[in-house]
Amino acid sequence: MWRLVQRYTGRVGYQRGAKAEGLLKHPPVIDCSGWIGLLLTQAMRAENDAVGRTVFGDADIHAMKAWSDRIIQEIADWTGYILAGAEINAHSLPRCATIGLKMGAPGWAANHPRVRGITHIVQIVRRPQDDAPFVSESFGDPVRPGISLTPLADWLVRSQPLLQLDAVWAVDAFRLALAN
Image (cartoon, rainbow, N blue to C red; front, top):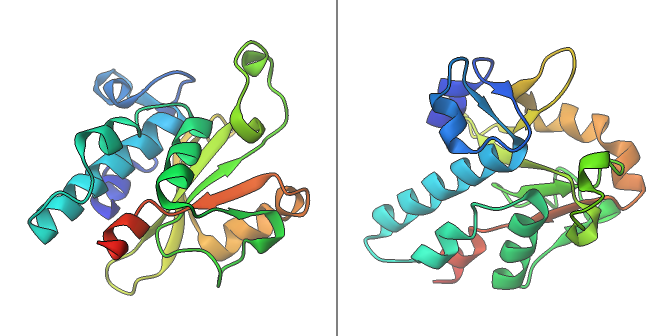
């Protein structure tokens, strides 16, 4: 995941509905679920290669090409594991957690009901040199739209209002690798 984060952070804009194919556009764009889906599918394939067998099948990998709420739900269903709201902190989060957030009720979601109301998704990634945790996301911020990277501690501080409202959920796709 870290190589993808290094390659695209600060170089790719945000466009709602744009998936991995958006990286081929000029200028390149991607939305939150497209970005996290790409990170997860690449990491799942890498895990399969690293252990020399199939931990994540084609259906598991394909399930990551979905909206943010579906990605969180699929991983929670496979693993039986999900943290919510106040349960989430720097110590409780799995090392490469995927996190879904309910960020209001945007107009575009009105005709597309979302599981738990999740409208945004982020991924914890680790810097290889020191294993430091960061949050990678693609976001439609009016000031700095696109793929960004934030130290986990800073992201948790910024996310406190949502955590206190129980509007954040964390899952761990890589629990499957640990279980096998």
